[in-house]
Length: 413
Image (cartoon, rainbow, N blue to C red; front, side, top):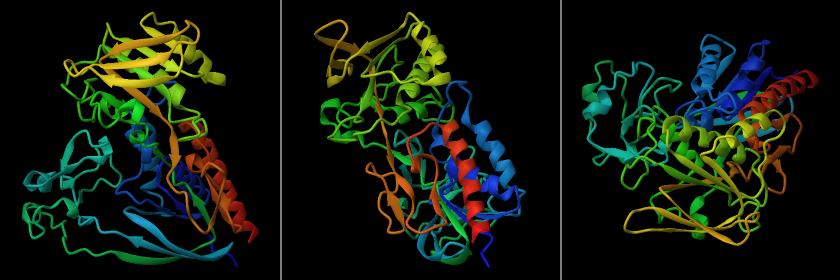
């Protein structure tokens, strides 16, 4: 007899979709996420393409589907510690790391107001800070604060405890383990942006006004570090000219030797951020190839038709800084125009690729680039960007298929 429960590892859009689709046809699902909130990378976006709508609407609809469904159990701040068994009967041990805030939390913000310590805000890629007692982001699910004990300057500090009138803070929380039985497992462990510091020639980390594409998403977001204003990091000056550097580390045997599929579309979307918000802004996109397949071709044509958007076929070789102004100076080849080209801009944005967040696991099989093919045993599959680089729409479609595949596994066993 199989165990009629599906474990979904990863609470981004792919994991959420898998869990919801399986639960809504009657199967128990356990959704495990290592961060304190659901939503993954999608929660960090300003807009989807090509409709250019904010991702919170899609996430909120899914949270509304999760909340009342008794078939879905959600664990945040949780990791899979061990898995054993076989299809239809896996034994899984989960490790729940303490968030130091319990279910009594009303998100009143009193703990953050009282907290004397600060920490870099990883949700905004370190471009601002939060208090050690913080809400991960404005639409967090669960809507509950977290306390970063590593950021507490004085570990004996209990100002947040005294400020909370709901007794929601417990600084003595310890890690817990939970043992569960499941019949099938879906890995939806998502992706990380490629580490741009590895590309010395592009200046990330030493030139303040060189940022990554995901950092731009946060700058453009209303709940981001600048409240949605497109300001460069060095002096908070409004960005009037920006250069997008395509394939930053991608399609390069020294970095990522594959195409991440969505970087071109992401930069086209980013061009619209500047053109819609700053009337006289100018955008230059330096690319190797422009990839906008199928229905996205219309979006490419629309962006190309803007006279303030220039697209140059050529790979950026180097980025330097003008120390007097903070401007970036890019050197790149212009294949169609011929010869080298130099361009000065307020800011450069590196279109870094997608790197799988899980690369080693004895239970899983990986393809040559590190993405998960599936499990070494039956009853284990992968979905979303854990499986291959893809956009949000494709990830949702694939996750729906993963839900069906996991259900078939339960029925088969």
